[in-house]
Length: 383
Ligand code: FES
Ligand SMILES: [Fe+2]
Image (cartoon, protein in one colour):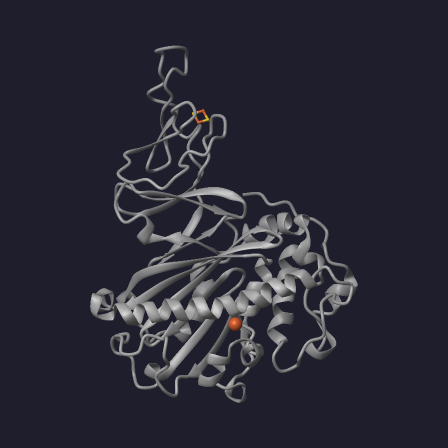
């Protein structure tokens, strides 16, 4: 995809604040959180130019299953083809531009456009154009390659499907390497998808993402979490390119975290007491516990509205059994409680982004280098 470049949206003065010591710098200014133009530019320059979590293999478990998703403001369709492989296409008909697959569907041999019934194979190739030359005069063998669905570059990691709409992002394995290197001991193949929790938040997606990795707010916002791991034992998140990561020790079983559920097979003693937080710029978060994984996914719908999904996985087939129903529910309730606490702050800050009393803020040298790093990543992509 050809993405035109434009001049920086941020002024030189603002950009300079991302390049100095954190205590002398700042985060992103107000307009980045409130302006429709910013979100339009983010769709084009950020979400369409890096690897984005688009969907899940479990959404299309069988050949002929198709699932529409929206990424960077564009309709895409994820499907499983006749060979059982995942494919991703721009979900738009080459005739007059209707969305071809408006709803999730299964058992399809062809994808038929709802407008004039052009039919595409599961490989995206145009197969037929009914009445194309007049009533009853069908085109059943369209010239190859003229009007096929456009494929989207994608990568599959276990259940997760990532897309790069530009086709020009770095190699996925290189992009993923900082995560892969730190999680070699985890047998992610043992994970089983369990449930998705959905939240609709009156706040900008960046406020939610920035809050993901902010360990500083825990004592004031999450009293239950603070009781388990006090702020004196927390550190600021570390960064490596598009990755933000943090880890802490689980000193004792924590109520609401699934006590007694099966661990990843072969996890050593240290691993059994370790929690990992990974945040992949711009909209994904991966939390790993010895017995689970939570995938956070953000969809920016408006400058002041974001939908968040938390996709929950537990370890091994047994974790899906009724025996563990209470533990699973405890985990969902815990996320619900934590998110409700977080979103209250996010919505609070969204309102404050209209104030001249804030325009990027003053940062803590201990806790906020990641916020400055995030601003730098955004500025780099928005150039
Ligand atoms: S728009 Fe799809 S067949 Fe006409
Ligand atoms: Fe929080």
